[in-house]
Length: 254
Image 1 (tube, rainbow, N blue to C red):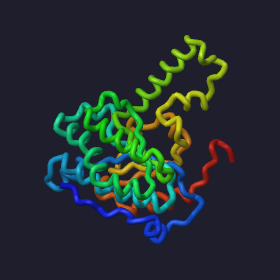
Image 2 (tube, rainbow, N blue to C red):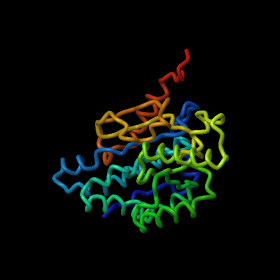
Image 3 (tube, rainbow, N blue to C red):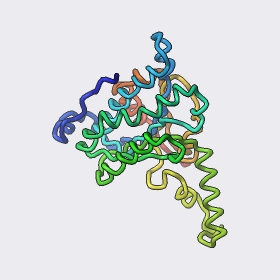
């Protein structure tokens, strides 16, 4: 059972709680939520217990992102490589979006959060697809934080699909090779309607990208934490934002 954590009851309460007033806030934060299994193992629990506990961390960080006026929060929820895990673990992970949305969708709606998703949705179980699509439909008119779930997502798969789509459009004379540039490539990616991430956070102590947003992270600032995802709190989130504030983003210039 997952304990429900209260969200903001209203915009007034949200604004009263806001503590982070700074123009230097990342517009788009991407998070690799790592360490669920190791969190559970450390406590003598099955790995699936860590994934379930991770739901609590998700809503904590969503709340923190809303307070800080972050525009987009992309969460690496399930990768194309995660199918290699035991079936019982995969089944549990792919039930969690439905469980999370069942608990929190009404409050997300009332707090102007918009749900989106990127990845190969067609190969996900029907209950996962239906839960995500329902949330997308219910929140499509909201214009606050975009909570973007990366589900059955792999960056190489995304780039390969983009190349195939570009070649198809060239063969059909819808696209000329002369039109190809970085902006054009970005239009063929899952994230075409989103800004590129300003900050990547990875929990759990690992220092790699794990096939996540490889094109989009070209100039993103990275912040790594040894804290396992279920224990990742607003405190660590704010530490990441404070570290980001100290950085100078030159994009190859001076």
